[in-house]
Length: 230
Length: 258
Image (cartoon, rainbow over all chains, first blue to last red):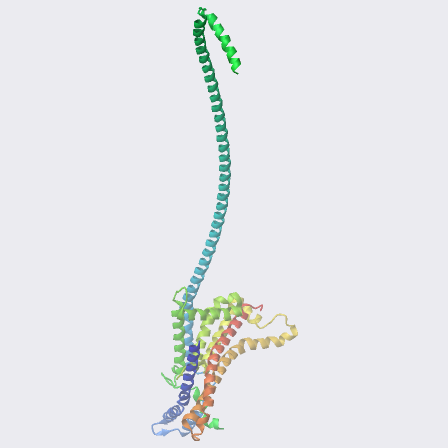
C-alpha cells in the first residue's frame, strides 16, 4: 500500500515536472504565424503584381486568433473515425468475447455451486440413511442379544431340568438296582442258609426229611429269623 | 497583469501543427494522433482482457472485466435497469474511449486532453444524440418525436409553454450541453495546469525579475502537483458524466412513461 502511494506521488511529480517544459514549448505560435505570413505573400503576389490590400487583409487574418470553440473539421473527421473504429472493434469483437468469458465463468460457478449443493444433499441423505441403518442394526443387535439371552436361559433351564431328570432317573435306577441286588442277595442268602440249615439239621436230627418238608421248615425259620433281624 | 504578460495567447495552448497535410481538410495533428492511440489502447485492453479465459482473472483480464462490469452496474443498470444490460457495450466503449482521450492531460510530455478541442466532444455528443433519438424511434415509432416532448399530466394551458421548452431542451440543447460540459471541463483543467506550469517555469527557470523568485517557485509547483491529481479525477468523472447522461437520455427514449 505504501509502495503504491509512493508510486502515485512519484508519478504525479514526474507529471508535474514534465508539465513545465511542455507548457513552455506547447505552442508553435510564432512558427505558425511565420507560415501564415509566407502564405499571405504567396497568395497575394502574382509575379510582378502584388495585391497590397489583399495582403493586408491576409495579414490581419493571420493575427486573428482562431476561435477556441470552433470545431476543427479535420479533428472531427479523424476523431470520429477513431471513435467509430473503437466502437466497431469493441462491440463486434472484444465485448462479445469478454461477455462469453464472463458467461462461461458464471455458468461454471453456478454449476459448481449446484453440484456442491447436490453433493451435500446426497451426503446428508446418505448420512441419514447410515444413521438409520446404524439405528436399525443397533436395535437388531439388541433384539438378537435379548433373544440369545432368552435362548440361553431356556437352554440352561432345559439342560438343568434334563440333568435333574436324568439324575433322578439315575438315582431311581440305582435305587432299583440296589433293591434288586438286595433282593437277589437275600434270595441267594436264603437259599444258602436253607442248604446249610438242611445239612445242619440232617446232621443234628440225623433223620431224613423229604426235601419239601425241609424247605418249608427252613423258609419258616428264615422268615422268623428275618423278622427277628429287622 | 503579470500573468497576462507571462501567459501566451490561450489559443496557443490548444493549437497544434498538422503532422500530415497541414491546412487541409484531412490535416492529421496531435489531437487526431491521440484519438487513434486512445482507440488502440481501448482495443488492446479489451481484446487481450476479453479473450483470456482464466477462471480466476488476473492482470489485464481482471482490469477489462472489472471495467466492463463497473460500467454495467454503475451506468447501464443504474440508469436503465435490467434492460440496460444490452446497452453496456456501447456505454463501456463511450466511457473508456473518453477516459483514455481525457487522461492524456496528465501523461508526461503530452499533457493535453484531446477533448479540450471542441471537435471531439461535439462528435461524441452528436453520436449520443443520434443514439437516443434512434433508440426512441425504434422503440416507439414516429409518435416518439412528439410524446418525448409532451409530458403527461401537464395542464393544457401549460402545454403551450412546456412543449417548446422540452423541444429545445431535448432535441437541441442536450447535444450542446453534453459537448460543452466535457469540452469546458477539460479545457479549464488544461489551462489551470498550464498556468501553474508557466508560473513555475517563470519563477524557477526564467527568473526574469531576479533570483528571489526561486523562493516562491514551490508554491505553483505544489499547485501543479495537486491539480495534476485533480485532473485525473476530472478525466474519470467527465467520462462517467458523459456516459451516464447518455444512458439517462437513452432510457427516457425507450421508456417514455418515466
